[in-house]
Image 1 (cartoon, rainbow over the protein chains, first blue to last red):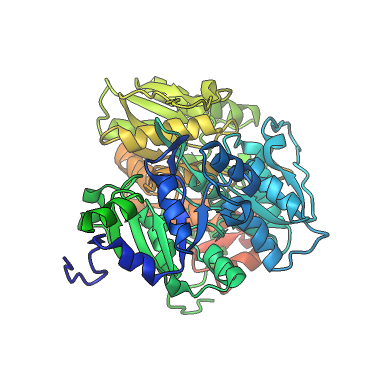
Image 2 (image 1 turned 30 degrees about the vertical axis):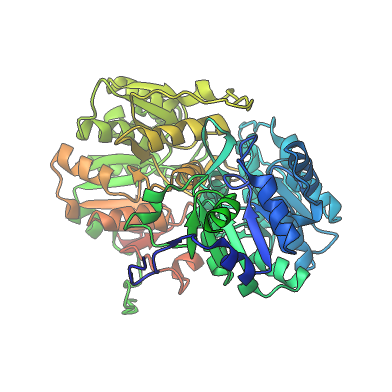
Length: 307
Length: 307
């Protein structure tokens, strides 16, 4: 099956799930397109997770969606009937706060947030001061001659994530902090082009909010979500996992699979989300996972078929 | 004075304006920072323009600001006491419409606008159908399960310019058109990082709106404003001017001077706007105009000094 391409060997269809399962100790799952689609659980997920847990595998759930906190995601898992602990959930909202902790971001500095409630919740839990977020959603600027937008000189980081209440006030506030506050960080939860706010269509993602700030500041952001390896490094460090003992399972090549490969993990693409087999096999696609399969419950059905 | 650098020879201070004036037939002036600052005329501008006209020079005024139409700019010149004809004004709002005309954009197709009134006015004058603009400024999305934003399948171009009423609705609408309507164009009036909405501070510019769409579509825009040469080519073609017979006068290196150089024109940087002498002479700056001077009225004062 391997094509011997220069950039990457072609992905193989998953034929022997047990071999893969036995070769790793941790599975990191992307959520949307792997565990659920919008508000619907994907077929066979509970049984598959139960089977992996019964084999002693560590399960971790990673999502670039920053609109919810870990706690809020915990409720979503519960509502869908999945038994997942908050500690197993790594959303990019949490990653932003964890990153600031990891660099000992000063407690007397503040964080300006362009994003939704999840980021605020995680910053609060981590003990950071913040401003912005949803409460700036209705703010407008008044452009009379000589008008100046004041901004807080104590803002030491601007965190940008998906924000359906995105507006010019926020762009200008964040831009002023990044351009005028010495050393101010520009942190992106993710740069996803599209996201799945509803299951009816693709929606402009966090990449658009980040792109706006990039356009006005001409500064590249530091990304804490996939495909940056920050969360992978954090997980490996926190749980003491060797990265080659991790299998990253996701539905997107340019975030999930790249994230796994950047981290030195095994990778499995599932076709239950945004990537189709023709997209994977398109000659223009240079990102090849180790394996691909239709959905994670193939772990059970393929196993049954070989017995 | 020339440093013999590999990338560009260092700019020379303007010492003999008559020599420059005699060597060209057309002056293209950037407006903000050259003719005015915010709502204030820069010293000596009327007399300088009168002198150039009396010598038979063609004067053209070019601005990346797309919030006004040519007609609206004409009123601004008039209010400031300058005698400038609408036909001499080239704003990026006009450039967007002129570009669509130049490619024979189909009259049965529509243009979706993320931007302000100037773009709508120019599209209307050019006879194009459009939607969006200020009227989408108050629109919100309602994210109930299964919700789908409908978009007009007849949109064949999305024009993006500075928009103080920028919101997520517009980002998603423009993204859907660019991603889903076959052949839909993505046109940017400009990608300026900052703009001067008021003279009290720098404001996030058209680059932020364009950056947002770039982030969600992962498509590069076609830019019609500076430093793209579209307007220069249009001017040269319309008036039958040889480009080496043009002197571009501006206050920004990365838009005005680059625009002049991209077009093969002579270039003069004035220090009456955003660029200071230390910025020009910074070793990291690779954009060197032919000449620099404090302000355009040096055309008169330097001349007087040499008499």
